[in-house]
Image (tube, rainbow, N blue to C red; front, side, top):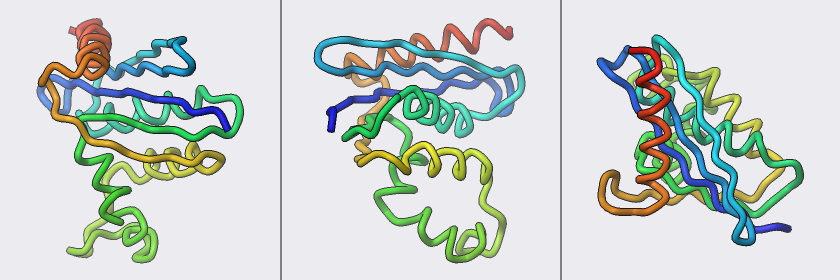
Length: 145
């Protein structure tokens, strides 16, 4: 399988408010940048959308490393939150419904054909790709201001 790196970030003002996401896919030294946004959204939704759009851009099964500064995304996979939510019919440990369920389900569908590893990096800490994705996300967000 091809080894692909996906870097993703989301941005939002007012939360909820205008938001954007930025994604860079890297394979064999080649890159593809993707971005988008919504007029009324949340930061967590934009973090999810970045990862979703990056994975949905893949045309064949791949070994994927997703790198993001979103603990919301990485912890959901790396700490088993998603498995727990699904077992509890999309309820959190406090019994409340999981937010953004439709995006989580879309993300689960997007990873279904790939081997995916989620890596957390600190945001705004000099990580080249995270900084690039942040600029893309902020640029998309600012289109709605």
